[in-house]
Image (cartoon, rainbow, N blue to C red; front, side):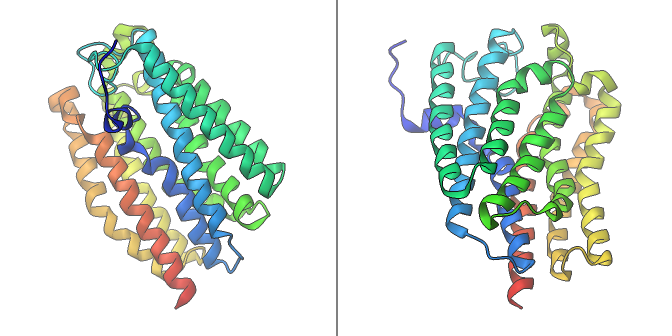
Length: 297
């Protein structure tokens, strides 16, 4: 395929709208550590965000390639259309993914050099889960993979690279941030239940059914805010964290759209994954600002 493409074409193929799912857990963790009075290496923190996003881009393109090769993505599939639309050949997406992985691995090794061998363990765990994600998704474990890859691992890993110690307290942030991130995948898989059945794979959404999946998605949109309120009351988060409750407005809108699944089916969930990624961005930025404000106030 000799079609000439721009940088924008290649960027779109990585699905950049989803990058808040990987960048925001790191950002929120940095803010939380700063609020806790720890000495944060912000240069390392920013580099970590960039490297995690590279891994995410590699994972997105790898997933698209595997979905195409497995027959999951076809011409009538919603999303992930870089290959089935004919814009890119499968091997081009595969090479793009491997190239992004190579750059991300190089960046990860640089982090290991500057921060210590413990970083390598977090990096290997994240890379393994990223590579295995398609297989795990096909066997109803995609939600677990995403929660670990874009919540637990980056938050614990960030605490180490930014402060020199693994701070288990950051796990308190895994629930609100992680559930919203899982919601991105869950809404996608709920929308694609029929197409995934046709492809012969088995996602978690298929296991529980469309109606239950819609309810679970609503919980993924609301529990994070209940968690933050409880954390403020119990003293785990500063009062300024209430600022993040502003994001409950788009969260409720997403939940209400998901409830339409019972009446409208798949069409009701078109675009919800992107809206949930935007929610993740808004919620996490507000959390970060609240931690920084509380630390400086």
